[in-house]
Image 1 (tube, rainbow, N blue to C red):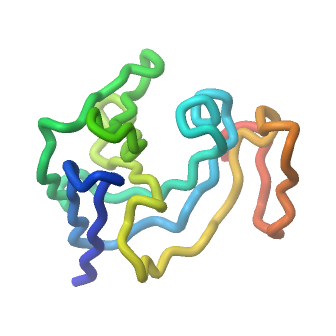
Image 2: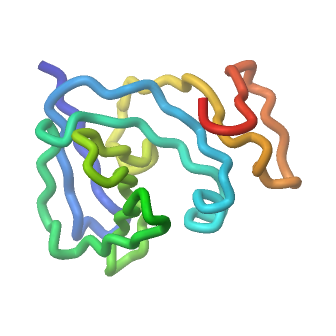
Length: 130
């Protein structure tokens, strides 16, 4: 079994994923850009394979009627995205300790991407979700 560990910037939130992680999806939607200051780079795991220590330090923000975004209330690190009722949770790739073993898969919501950068890594690009 593969185990992946990570934390927020200040260490108040720590998590361990015991299982496989999805390849990284880069989301360029306006919400992701506004929350992080750039675009989201997230993997995802089965909820029952994620153990979180310091969960009381997570603020869950209802960014839309469909999903919650979790961030550390102490340092502000964006950490999680979870669709309501889902059995999986997205975890920001940058929160994992190295080596992550992660690779990029695709870019989504490219129609909303910032006008200050180009996507030039050769991965598939989708105007909306994909």
